[in-house]
Image 1 (cartoon, rainbow, N blue to C red):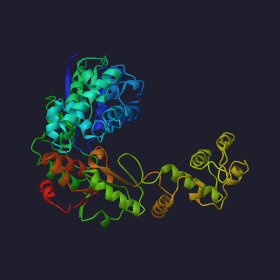
Image 2: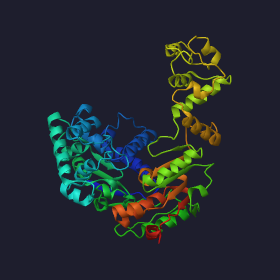
Image 3: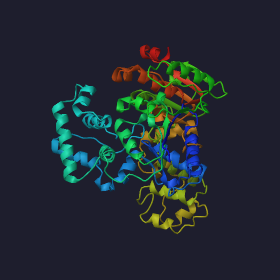
Image 4: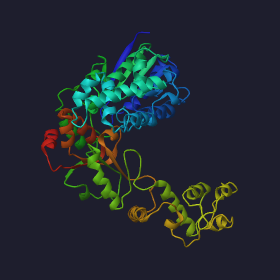
Length: 510
């Protein structure tokens, strides 16, 4: 079968995932390739999860039928035949650090927005970036140019990690990619390869792709160079735009309204190195407003996402949201109040007022109650196994068990453990503003632009201060890509919060 390579440019909201599902349908139909010989890869777990869900709903393909729908890290991990005990974890880095009297903070998780691991240690980050970029450690150290870092310590940490991994026969995430790219392990036997979010692949990740596509006769890349916002992490956009001469632009957005599209185009056309493309907005006008402060807007109704270039811009916003009784979800999926405590609170107040509650809610409540002679006797959880799961239950029935001692007149913060005055005040403020409806699904989300890439919302609030990032990373084209990505998350209304210092803002907008 003659080898074919195709690149799909997917501008914001232009149906990239739908198109890739059509590609898979054609591969199975016209080309006769079975699904287990189709690989769908990305650095992003979110992209793979969405692909699996869409393959199930659109193509009726099960997880077992699509064994090669994996992140690049997962693909290499399985190809090398590794076990979880062989993977470097947080405790391994702590052990190395203790031997050096140095704190090596490392979460041993892959950040879904970058494909890199999560670490706050600048020395570990330097090592990882040098490997992602496939450059020397010394050149990466000089590029970072952090005056608080010392080259001697950088060398020592790098050497000690290598010795530790060799002695313990362990591997980090970069090792998996590197070893596979160099030919180790068993590459999956595939006829077709789809690489999603390809604009954000590092040099090392592209090396993995080159090995994966060796046996494939059909190769498809998808992404958008205008949304390549991870150059600092070793991404070179030219690798994506130059991967093949066969290019198709998906030119109809199903998300971005006309006014937002016009602004987005005025930003992106100023990027010097990009593939020139045109795409059309929806038939809705949409709306753009320029505001001095987030609190000039009414957040009491509707769906909102507040985005900033960096987390440092979002911290004071999140503090004010909590102080004003707004429930929100951050970029990690965490809410500003505990959902477990909230569920327990709502359940208890329902019971205390004479209501009926299902067994799952009762179990959630029991987990949050202290086991003592005032609230709940030990062994109460075993009593739950005797309750009928098909019928609702009242507080009277629970009290008859002689295990449930809490009485109707006890307030929720006495019945539920771990509730101090501050927690109580926060919960009460949220419930006064939001009521009991929708508390499990916050209307407001707070996220960096990088974490929000691929997402959308009816109302987008964009904190436009890019001065810190522009000073740190020093490339205005990179900032234009970030700003463009943020702008194009809006489905209806875009609210831009103007910065106090407008130097970089003007360069982005004018």
